[in-house]
Length: 258
Ligand code: FPP
Image (cartoon, rainbow, N blue to C red; front, side):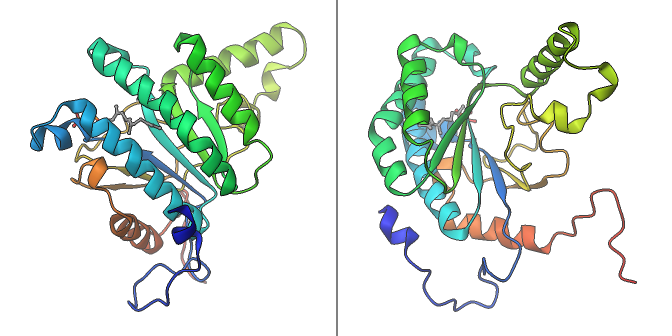
């Protein structure tokens, strides 16, 4: 399946189709994969059914992003707040995550995908932590798209962690407080080395950022849809990218022509 999407794109028919070589493709896309539970409920199935479908869909969207030349895809798989859900659901998502690592690493490798994680791993099961470290290491030589999975991730917690790391460096006499700037701060975030997300996509209809990449999305373009994550198709990704390509990104400045 990967091969199909990695093959050269079919000749573009529609005037508005995405033309990666000609128009701005986001370097980094972040996705809040919301609506799995409601998608399942509408089908009379347990919420876990929706998470399974959501995990499958992430693979589809990753393939599309890779084909389009996107450098990084960050997906919100589990937030620091998701521990509040029923234990059975939490356990299911963790199992899904572990089995994703078991079953997908070879294919990710065959397609030159790099794998990273954002979030506090210390609360995850030791066996899962081991799988994550092994998967990361076995894909570390790749040079293609970065799949960054946010697991036990919270934006505020990430910022506090970065502040603590910098404070420790100051305390150790390695850094002066006045030397702390945006670059040094970013270097202590989980996403160090990745470009900031250009586009944040949220499915499922809610209009909030839910503690996701709070520092990194400062200038991201936001795009939302009512569609639930398992139904977020490559066509909808294309719609989001076409909308993105029409945005006037001013970064607080003026894009007036002389
Ligand atoms: C939000 O939908 C989704 C989650 C909290 C979990 C996302 C997890 C996956 C897509 C699968 C696991 C990931 C991998 C990498 C295998 P929701 O449950 O909040 O849906 P709702 O808003 O309809 O209740």
